[in-house]
Amino acid sequence: MDLRCPDCGREYADRWRCECGAPLRFAERPLPAADAPDGADLDPREGLWTFAPFLPVEPHVTLGAGYTPLVDAPDFGAAVKLDYVLPTGSFKDRGAATTLSRAVAVGADRIVEDSSGNAGAAVATYAARAGLPAEIYVPADVKASKLRAIRRAGADVVRVDGDRGDVTDACIDAVEADEGWYASHAWNPAFIAGTATMAYEIAHQRDWSVPDAVVLPVGHGTMLLGAYRGFRALRAAGWTDRVPRLLGAQAAGYAPLVTALHGEAAAAGGNDAADGIRIREPVQKRAILAAVEATDGDVVAVSESAVETALERLHRAGFYTEPTCAVAPAALEVYRDRGVVDDGDDVVLALSGSGLKG
Image 1 (cartoon, helix red, strand yellow):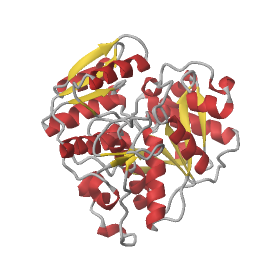
Image 2: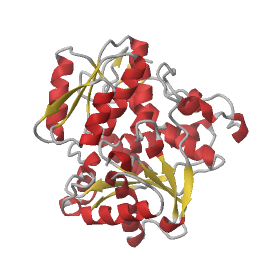
Image 3: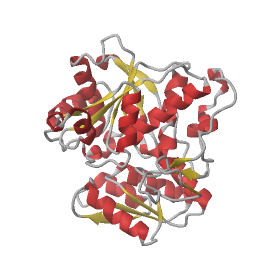
């Protein structure tokens, strides 16, 4: 359960950020000692903890989240991972379950989080499950549906004027004033340990093979980093033999990773439809870029009109997602047009949030 700074090497029993300012990681990476089991030997009724040998956290708080369907989507020439069917309607359930489990393990008595909506709803819900009070900082213009989900879980809501960075700053001020344990989906390593379970599920659902590429939305990058660390852990355990290419999708005008990789012109434009990933300064930026480079991946920015077109296609194909999800299929079209993905490539699209919250 100890945490270590990858930059300076300091170790902590519990802290949300290193004294040097870097995000922390678990000091030890758990791996199973046995070979990959036959598919029938795993019980998906355990949810995320179906893959307990890979997880650094015990299941102190759970709603059974995990093991979402992986289905073919012929209209998109890909398989689709349906993380929008998790209990609170987004992939953030994965990280919220592991983060609140860690909160219980270290004796937290009050939870604080900042979010544009989905993470706040998930953290508030799992805090309620744990019997812990929670305070969620949100943008003043947060969608009413996501605000209702937070409030109905019993959490206090603090609405903050300004951009997404202002919301985080206000929340960190509260944490530093000792007003609660920071269950940050951007900073907390337990959150990424939870999102890594998507990789374990994909590999198991494919009989311990991995796709050529996974295309997924990127805001703070917790899904991409989880996928990277999950697929790396599977390879390190000998359960699979490679890591897929990780291909990110950001919203035009809010694409700092695209700017870093391809320059400002490639990231320019606007996309207010994909409100869940409008992040200008992702906390884990260096780690995300390293993951993209290590997998021969890439990140592209997609426009609002491309998202709207992709969203309509998703809905007509039976996938009722929120707009932010549609950046993934929109980006896949860009990758195919540029020759990054060939028509015969084996691709998984990650769909992250439910249309019921749109």
